[in-house]
Length: 235
Image 1: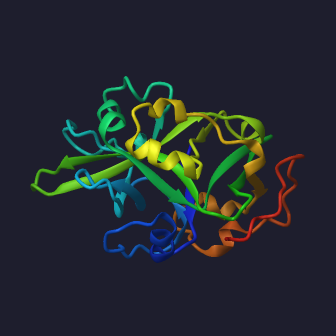
Image 2 (image 1 turned 180 degrees about the vertical axis):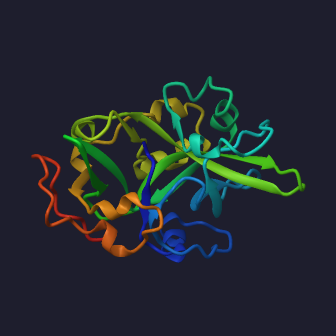
């Protein structure tokens, strides 16, 4: 967790929402973002502090890695150990970022089957997750820039799906995460009332599937109480 997410908005909408200042990259929306794929992140310029919207690859490759083969396993960084783990501690200290998404997916085991669920903000606004980024120099001399999503212990209804969840940052915490001296204080679960959960179709389990229908409620799914909210309308 978090192993799949969706970005329904275009790069221009995201750039405006986060008030980024650089030229807006052109990355198409995706409704089934998976590790090793490219995603949008908001980073701070090291000299001006201004927000930049950039395209990085999901799955962090530490600067000291010999190769990039383990990147998919570095899709998440546990908030409880991120300051000490060699793979993440430098990025946590110096290279924090915001990961915009419109929601994420999680699977709930029901007997022998796994039912996927989507989660978004009830407000319909973009979901801003805590991230880390890193640069790794490839054998050909080119730099590969990657990111990881920071997770925390799940709370509320999310705990019915999985014991972990991404750290979702409210707007007042964005600058503290990007610039602040005590980012560990922000590594906590979002308020349950801010989140909407609903069951979606099993197609989302196939990475090749990527279309707006993936986030529609599955009319055949039977969801337990608390996990069947109306899908929010994008604000």
